Length: 65
Image (cartoon, rainbow, N blue to C red):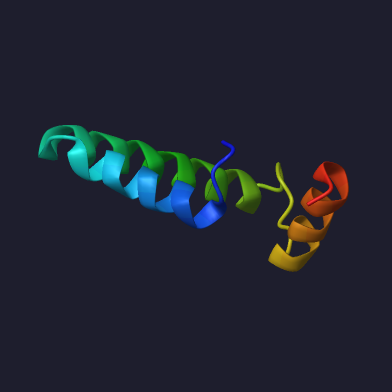
């Protein structure tokens, strides 16, 4: 977590690439299922939509970065 963002992204990509094809498909399927569940919850009014710049400002304010 102490690595700069770019290096963390590269590391995450390398780790995903090191998984066998079946494991990678399971991970992608799980994320797709989660994304669809969140979309459906939003459409039902259970979770709000937030714009990216506001979220980033909030995160920076909370974590001082």
